[in-house]
Length: 492
Ligand SMILES: [Zn+2]
Image (cartoon, rainbow, N blue to C red; front, side, top):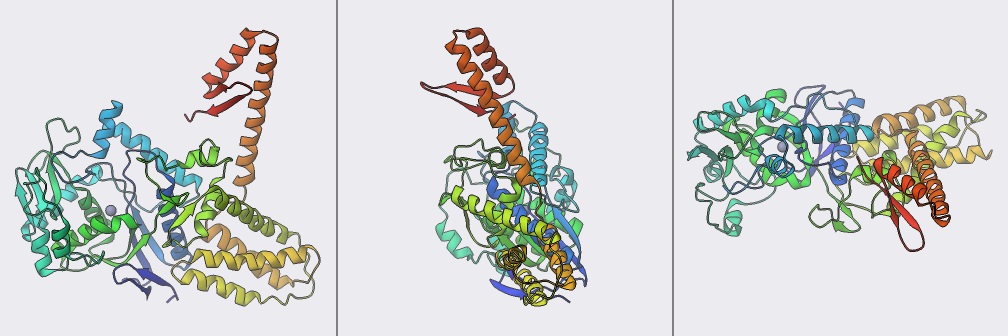
């Protein structure tokens, strides 16, 4: 038995966390749709659930953590004119859909590894579970909640709402949804606009398609999470999480699909991570108010004037509670960088402090407070504030103010290392290393620019052009302005 409480979106309350099976936790997190590079806001969501996973493991639970890869069937909407996002990208870039999937799955893994997140126990793909999805549709039809129109299968939301409550997670009422939905031409396939696709018949030009009893087609997006969570975690499991934007309609539809077949709630605790804003505005690809993690790490972006390491960005994320909106800005990141360096510095300093006397600081209470913060719905900002109480103590000891006994030092050192590296999942060394590397690169480029400038002054244009062209061939582009040159680094 632990003291952990989690905020359950299902009833908007903090509840005591009691898993369905003693000592074991089944956790399903909606993964990415792999048709583009993962953006920073998505990273925050996965880092939030990494914190939750790490803490559950630390508390001694045996956790099966399932996080899917959506590599098929993610329609922009259910209408006939809409297109699978992966197929669309493949068509635009003239690539096989599976090339798109491979490229962005690698990017996703690579980026999360830089943030030092732990891999899930199982990472199933939608295309690897077409059989399970078809079987699940058959069951939904058998229960009377799915209907076929022209080779496509839809879920009957209105029928489901008569026996169950559609909208219980998002707090929406079906009659309000009906009232607020405009009736559009071209969606005549569905009985009601609120119904959603379980299976879509593929247009002739649609490349990703599978055989089914109804048509050559592909599964609806909501279905894969229900089919895969049921397969790996059972009909009822402990935690289902994802970004807040998935609460409706995605998670609401997952509940409807599962309950229509299994006649019981699929999930005990629904957890949702809040979104991130950039300079106070919603992050979106369409408006350009958006930034890729790699561009933050390299400093090659037009938002921030310097690079920030993955650990600093992660520390910045963890300084906010996962359910709060977080605004990222250069000022905020710089403050986090200072804080992060102070924290890591103090842990290193502690090793060199000689034990003598005894500190007035109540280390056992401090340790309890750290746990209390994490037990209170994974409150990492409060935990970090507590960690800084220890930093203050260490900095005093450094200047020979006060004292610390051997036992106190042992507890402090063990627990600081535990909270910082194991639970928050921070790393101690990448900040200085990546900054040093990018600083050295910048110095080297500036030196070459100076040599080129001198060559041009001496009318040695051959050498000047050689420097420019050689740099360009390795992705560093010099831009000549009137007085000075500047450079940009192209991401490979
Ligand atoms: Zn999902």
